Image 1 (tube, rainbow, N blue to C red):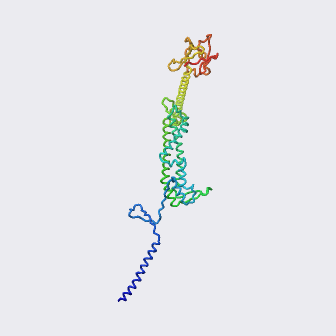
Image 2: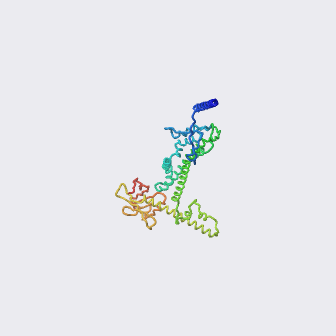
Image 3: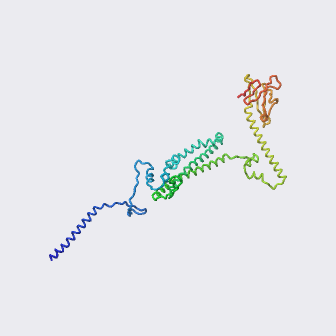
Length: 408
């Protein structure tokens, strides 16, 4: 029995020692193996924090160093993109060029800066270009509102042209950023190529185009719409202010719009009708009478205006510079309440001569319509001191060189 026990112990002992050696060998090998890498948990949207999903791929974190510029991250990502497209033809590089442009970069500014530059541009066009041109068409002294509205129209057009230039460039870059392919020229000899963006480049470009460039393009589009609305409102206001007005006292051809103006009423005057020859003759005679009456009224008004303007410089008291106390008068009056008359009087009140005629009154319109010189003689006709002066516009010039000027 003891022998059996001894034999069993001998059998068990080698087994135990072999297990110990195996455990020692496994532990030494485990210590030689490097520790496993710890992976960061990733969570899917909609899952709770208690159920993380482990990703075997390492997470790449790109941090911006302190002191780097605004475009340093963009430059780093763009430089790492492995594609055959030249750097100056890549959408991200073209976006950076637009941001750095002194004029096209306005679109990428914040709203206050963008509005300030847009207002400065409009003021520049208004003062330097639009208002001087509008002042040629409308006199600012008599038509200030028309001149301002016309200048505003030109300012809106010029501002819209600059905004359209900026809009076209930003819209082009937006389309290239959102597109899955990039068209480029490899050597510049019209050897066009098409490059399909890799997933990383496509994701970056679409983020840039969607959240950065698209709002800029939308703001420029609203600017163009505002400029167009400004042009429409300015033209409507100018048309309502500067539109011609015709009253019932104007002749028929002016009420119908005047020469070169189309209207249904003017067309009806020349369309064939069912009138008889006698009625057509009467209508034609009546039309000629209306035309002649209108022309007579126009001539009469024109003569009256010319006469009134002439009377301002012609009528008055004239003095001899050699005899300061001696003054003669050319007076204007109205004998019948409508026609203006002239009276030339001498020193003692006797009527003088005008154009060789001695009478109490002359028609001012007749003197204005007369051709040739205006001869004035303040003394009675036939006297020994008759001297006939000639009206020069600034005074009365006599043959001896003496000029009688008008007293203020």
